[in-house]
Image 1: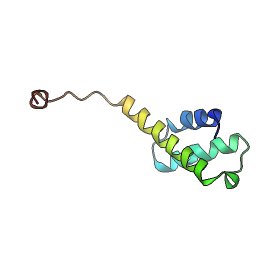
Image 2 (image 1 turned 180 degrees about the vertical axis):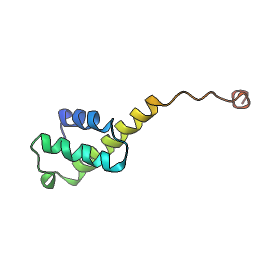
Image 3 (image 1 turned 90 degrees about the vertical axis):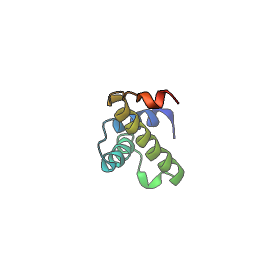
Length: 76
């Protein structure tokens, strides 16, 4: 999978709220690039879905407030 597709999937997946949104991000990216998903290898599809999941997770983590470390844990 080329870098442009990977970046496009990453960009769409950052907005994903559910697993369906992740799958849609992958398939709509392929559709916009005029790539038939039936002709994408299984390995490339796995890479695309993993990339989408990472992007969504990173976007969620970036929005979460930092949790303070309890004093007991700091003493360890």
